[in-house]
Amino acid sequence: MAKWLWVSTVVIAIGVVVAVLIGQAREKSKAERMAAMLLQAVSHPVSGAVDFTSFSELPPPVARYFRRVLTDGQKHIRMVKMHQSGVLRTSTMTETWSSFTASQLVVPPATGFVWNAKVEMPLASHVRVMDSYVAGVGAGHVSLLSAFAVASESDAPELNSAALYRYLAEAVWYPTALLPQSGVVWNPIDDRAAMATLTDKGTSVSLEFRFNEVGEVTGIYSPGRFSRFDGGYKQVPWEGHFRDYQ
Image (cartoon, rainbow, N blue to C red; front, side, top):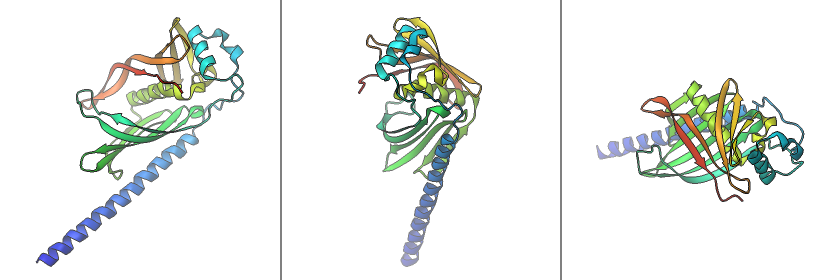
């Protein structure tokens, strides 16, 4: 009896390992397809170069910012690949923070990104989180052990809007995407702030950008970005802070 029990345990263990490996291959393939779709989704290829003389019609803090972070005559950023590490929490109601590593692909001429993160969990487990905005569609996908899907949603109007907000806020990492030639409309607020509006595939978002005295973006703010709470979406204030430019 003990022998058969041991054999059954081994068979189950092998089955679990095989299922995880198959699931991981499936999820990896899904991430690769999303990246390929993003690269093919270029809708407004930007030609030419950055021209400082064109900044005269922009709000003063925005013009100072572009002169600070760009070089006159440089080409527009066409692709960004980033690797990240840090901590995150799934709710403001919890004090538990989880370590994560992530890769992110951004294609400004396609107005989109794919973020692929591995979030560490207890008992040496993890969840894979993939957020994306491709061809006007926002999507979120969560899989246990990078193998078994536990949550997935795409193309809800609120999710599309939230993903486009993220793209616009994170454009401080790829600042030519904030130029008027990339579709961003700037309106003045005061000498340290301006409103940026971006419209893509029928979705429009606006963010207040805040600047310091040397022209760097120090933060962004929206009074109402969609977030998911208790199975539904509602608009809540949302902000980000930027520092330690290098």
